[in-house]
Length: 383
Image (cartoon, rainbow, N blue to C red; front, top):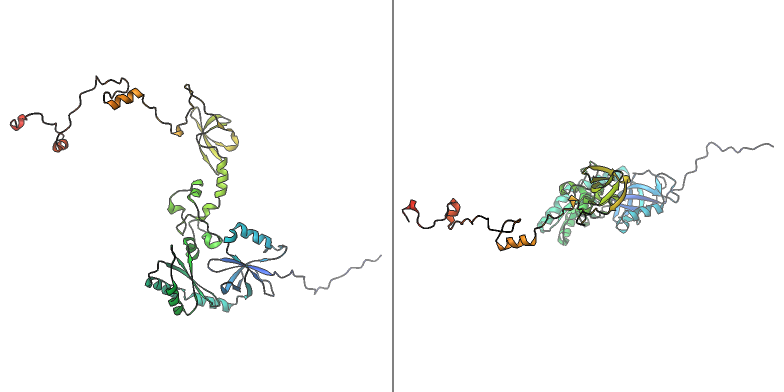
């Protein structure tokens, strides 16, 4: 039976996947994230500069990825994964919006127009700072941002208190000939706007990818055994570095596995006291009863929190690290000292004590170290 083969014509165009309906973009100096409707009739690559309508106005945005139904492409994700990422990255505090639309790919003319607007930054910053000083406002103007559509100019300022800047905004809008928005930011957001590199040599986390800036406690630095010198554990914002909380949960889990200090453990070499421990390496420094010390891995410790051995008087043996109190005197010795009859703790008797030395009677004698005068002084003519 003959077999028929269907031959496809060579000029048949390949079947292209469906165009993504939405795009995930990043926009603004504070790097907000948005999922906007895609109106383009062709596909663009990640990192492409686009012109979009955002809740703030018309501005240039950067494409991060696309959102499709199956997420089969390596440069595309599903909406479920996108929402799950937002939930685990801050939830309601995450700067995310879906009220926007992609208009077009940014042209060289759009980029030139944006650069022209940015060239006015130094002049407008000077105007805003001069007005803040004129009205005696407790604020520090740190940055100014321009939108491509010129709907508004956004001034960012840092202040520790609430500021009434209505008069300043009215004068500033007349100078820049545009609508002015004043945005108050904290110390961490100030670093996000103007900082560049950190001590590690990388871009500041707040400027590169970190969206939700949560406070960091000193407990995280203590748990990770970092130095408590604030100049070394503080970032560009003057607060504790955000990277201290990246591994804080891991440090807490590993620390919980280590035995407590000054507790008794049983190892392959015998019983001993726990002196110290290393969280990451999971090593325990053990001092054995014969005085020897050794670093023991956690897997070689067979028993934890053993009962402390008892002394001949029935009391538990105390490790030197416990800071045991020195032995106290007996009641008779304390009563002898309080009564002034004895300074000898062993005998409690003051019969063999030397007589008291008379104290100088005048200030000059005390300073010169001379003994007090009793009666006449022959060297002074009997006076």
